[in-house]
Length: 274
Image 1: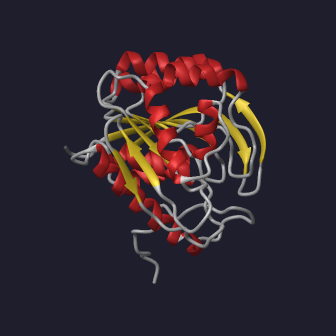
Image 2: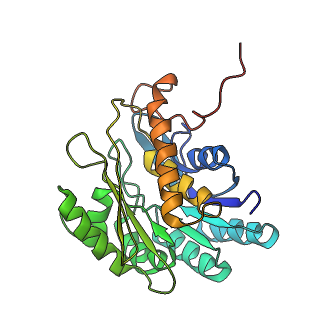
Image 3: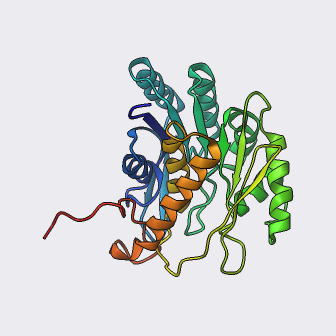
């Protein structure tokens, strides 16, 4: 296809390392035209989240409806939604418009450890939004919350969790779990891609940098941008991970903040400044 129109429905991180600003950067870097619906507002930087301002679900609906009424959306990434009413609204509108690809990043906790999802919203995320997802991309702590179990500690446990997560998803069409293994101990960062039948390992190695703010947002946005352009979901997942690895490897070229800095979304572009 030509240039796909990609939509991010997520929260706003003013520092630009995560949320819709990071999503727009990743989608743009990978050849998609990025649109965004603001689902939550945060006051945060590279060190902490200091405040969260909910967005009225009626306004979230108005943004989504207005956008879909005019623009053909080929792919959607859903990130931080924060509250139950917004999750239910997003679920309702995505079920109505039925975009070809929906990547769900079940954002629950920030890099600094701040809670980003109301406890009452978890059931709606699991029972409604998860059923619409083409791909769900939890990290290991998020997978533990979704399954009400302790965090995963081994690759063997990751395989079991990927299978359990896939059983939570709809069996209407092809659905995938991309379980991210970045929280495993050791130097390897193995991710698992599972569709209920095949289990694909996406190997990787830990990069020595503290600048990893927004890695989950970036990976899921990259995957959403690539799904309409790739021959298959596994190919899109491999390409998305390769893009993220490059963004992390080049993160130290940026000088943003004093905490966990962002990844370098445009690492593939050479500076035009001489």
